[in-house]
Image (cartoon, rainbow, N blue to C red):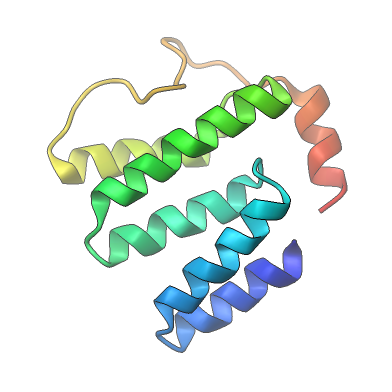
Length: 116
């Protein structure tokens, strides 16, 4: 996973944004709950002005985390989603964001990060 994310970063530096997204999609195909890859794709889409795709990616991340790990997105993903909503002129609480700040359940998440 880590190599795929690092390769995507190199591709982004070389302005191969499509290659970076494709590489990150490969990481996500291997682990649909890899928040780092989802966040990177969201940022890439946003940098290309494709806010709707970035917003949809957040919803895919939320779905995968709930389905596979029964957790909510990490604060970094929620914050990025909120920034994208603001940039798009949309308002409201992000799907998957708790109504009051809470910490994600760490048991499953900690285990998942240990294998990356």
